[in-house]
Amino acid sequence: MNILVINFNLNGLARADYEQVCADLAPTFAAIPGLISKHWLANEDTNTYGGVYIWKDKASMLAYMESEIFQSIEANPALANVVANDFEVLAGPSQVTGVN
Image 1 (cartoon, rainbow, N blue to C red):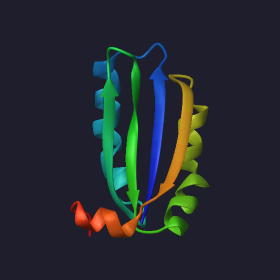
Image 2 (image 1 turned 180 degrees about the vertical axis):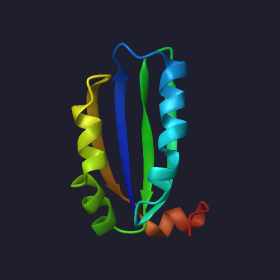
Image 3 (image 1 turned 120 degrees about the vertical axis):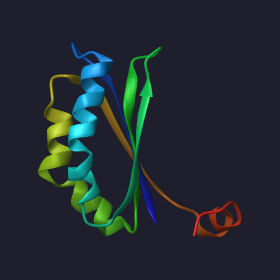
């Protein structure tokens, strides 16, 4: 299992408008092969938004990172300071704390 965390700042886009875009895009993300779940993030106080993506495996995550959808995040002028960090899940302790 792998985790991808993407953060960015909104640039000229109100939170309400961003939330509508997220709602419109949610079915597209739900259909991405290998994506177990995406948790949409918002911290209006710091203007930090993004997502936590949980992948069944690293290959699925890497395929997403090569996709047009991922590239559009980095190229979108309404999203500034995009940072993407990937992590491997430590299976042993994660199982103890509730992750299968």
